[in-house]
Length: 317
Image 1 (tube, rainbow, N blue to C red):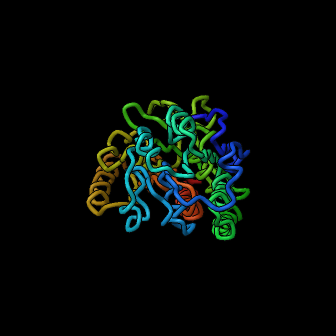
Image 2 (cartoon, helix red, strand yellow; image 1 turned 135 degrees about the vertical axis):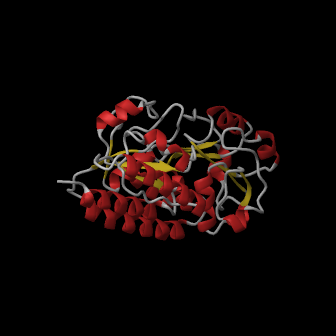
Image 3 (cartoon, one colour; image 1 turned 90 degrees about the horizontal axis):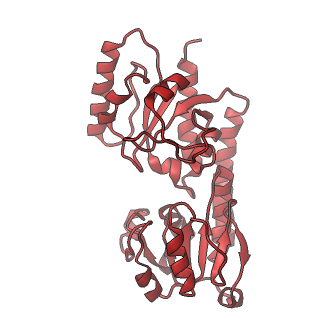
């Protein structure tokens, strides 16, 4: 979703910071917004961390964190199909959207109704950190936003200090199956994994979310396969399809105990049938770590950096 210029918008671009403020309603306001609607799950979580949870009057059904607080907030549909009429009826003085997660037509509907809309589009880890600061300023919590951003930046800097100068570990991280899909270099997830020390085998594809074949993946020889639990929920059931790629070594699944047990059993079977073959290490990972910016940035790069480091240490010379 690329927002068109509107007298009722606060447009934010690639860096996640407002490019301009236009419209008499926004320019005349001297106090922070008192009624906020968030249509971006990760930014809903960030708004609560910015201590403005009591001002949030509506979210999407995918806004699940913080669970104990967001459950009490009215749900206004999904990220791709929000109830725009209900949003307008709530009379928010700020609606938070994202250029990728939300649709242009919904943006245009809300802007045409005279609502002030903050559209974000972080595509890098640094964008995500800056977004914490800019969103804090937008809701009147600039000092807190700056502190939260600094904490995330410090964590990222620690990871960069350990991965700088190292060989990037080639990886395959599908986000969908049937067809298999991944992401190129023009995405936030790619930058999380780049900062963590990974090298995306489909980074140079023209499409942001290209379709790939397992034959292409095999030819690219990834050393790590990361299987997130969203948007497609990868589980142990998907491991047999990856047999030509993954190593016959135990994976390190993260998630529910039954999934871990299934994954270990599946990998044991692969190990037995392919004792002599090297291949990619496979890890189940939290999809939110790759897609949710805000307070998850530093933890995400730190967690994946450990996986890449382990792969580099155990790789045959």
